[in-house]
Image (cartoon, rainbow, N blue to C red; front, side, top):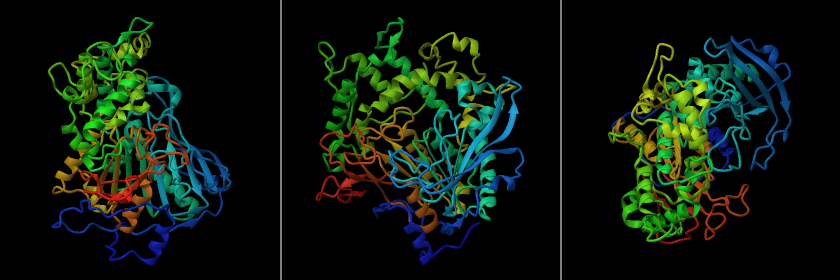
Length: 583
């Protein structure tokens, strides 16, 4: 339901928003949309309620194709979450399944598994927690708010939360991709089935449905969020997408292309195959990061061990000119000519033999020295991406016999960028929807339904993500802005996180709470002109061991709405966000 614009937040709204954890919203500009277009609707704030009882909730439930397998009351403090020191409040835990069936293709049992956590003192809001990887597990529905090791979560703030396995069991691995319906559930249909079910369970529990509904996730969860913004904009008022792999099949192809690039300069392992982790050592990645800092650190006005002006760095740093060539052996302070070629190829992006781009380029950032970056480049690319590509993303999928007869590394080395990569767009009589159609948001630059309702979208992306390109996300936002008169900032904003790897980690100020900022925007009309982020040094709830030694333990920085960047004001404590402004 849309509500007329509010001239000023009511006293009730101010009190409600005051109960959320503090989020620094520093006024430093940020697009507000074309002045010629009419004002967008302002959604009213949620009103809370109290859960009367948990024990008899199962008896009230009669939802088609849905079974509750357990209902139990969790006492205050009975659930813990990493980094959360405040006891998570009392809540009712529901576990269940939807749409149980046996596949006619692989003979396996399928269902959409889920759990909901309904706080006794409810804030009137629903939080769909989208999960990462290839799903398959019903993880604890705490309601992640984004960033590394947050100090609160949605459940602690009073949201009714949900998570799911997206329609298949983890024990199936990527082989669930043999079942056409399981592919569709994983891509988007599980969310479509679960959303009305969750809202009905909330109505039965509290006597009313949620006043406001939110959707959040990172990685594949960020992809789910981007898809929800396009497909389910009528169901969600606020959507948070972190490091979104919204072109995930393309990214998987890019990972396999990376395997081939790294293999070209690798030494052979004990199996006789290339050991791709030998392509660049940790010391060499660290050295590359130092060279990037040397060219780009001061571009934001502060020499602080961070590259704040990411886009300027891409034109300021050159692999060819700024990285010395080894004149003898590999010492960790130079690269061979072959290494420089591979590094340039990796960041330029995957291509076929005709030179056509298969995925986005990547951006140079000193965070490539992070251990998480190496994990995605070396480990995930041979242990995770081959199975996903073989069974979920290419059509028709591989046979299990042929896939199991090889290794993930061999699959990647043999993957053809000319004949295999196009299969992410293919269909057959049995697999009638291509991977790019069921995984990616349809027409991602058209979010008119979300916009016209007064709903909001926030996206964040670590600049040093080793698997999903932040440049791809920025290009998407550019297209969204272009489709909205050159400025989409009145309903959608992107925040780049310098130094951060995939969803968290790296040499970064990576601790932030985007959900509270999103609620303030959706329900209070306070657009996030910046969100404060903190480094997790000594004394933090979870310490980030990859922070440079010269940083203060509590360094803070403003995350700015793209394309603005945090610039040093010229005076003030270089460790404080207050010394920077979004320009």
